[in-house]
Image 1 (cartoon, helix red, strand yellow):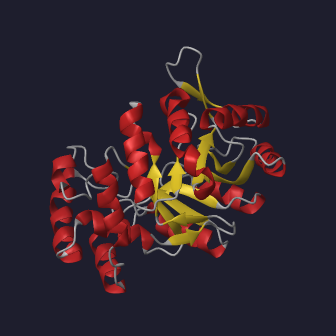
Image 2 (tube, rainbow, N blue to C red; image 1 turned 30 degrees about the vertical axis):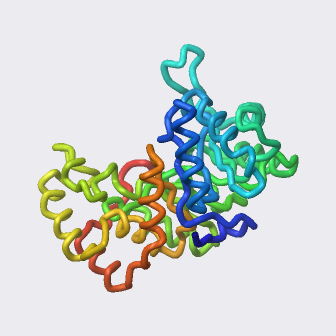
Length: 303
């Protein structure tokens, strides 16, 4: 599988990464999914301390232990579980980040994290302090690089201006084109990579189409919009290809995108996603058709 450079780092990530949140806590099943990803050439695995109260990190770390030097391991920090596990609070403080990284390293069973990401962020945060924490962890060898996982343009701009981040993880798909105008071009201009999630828009852009549609619609699209747009997209953009292929290739067509992180709940789904990423890229004409049929979208909230 092709690899792309992550920002200005020396990390080269496969065009498809595995979003580990979806692998579950049944260890045997989870291992099979991760092993299938490795067999298919995926080298980028994304988890978070939040997932399954840290159990996800433990399972991922154990499964990747034999190939640790050959893979890129990414995790996240900032969401702190309440003592009773009924929810979590936001804590981007330097003290918490520097303490929590030790817990993640222990659960992952590794001496270092390739990409450590802030799992959110607001303009009310003490961003300078958060950056200081990441820089100190990098200097100490606990992490190799850092990034943020955010869809807030104002927060992303602050990190671009003040930090040495190499990546921004954000939701992006044919039905969620909000990052295009405001963020992706900015990232590309600063040699920072986008790592995208949600490429199938909760299954709407898979071959199940309206089978996954909610009566509430999706983002700027009403249910009626989806009834009209999805079959048109399928007809005019997909032709003989699977909708999953077109969806993943649409993300990869943007020059700011280094990797599309997709979840998978079975080895079969891994193989299907890999085939989609290995298929032919979209032509400029196909990208233009998709843009004509869908809404550009802007971030009205999440500032």
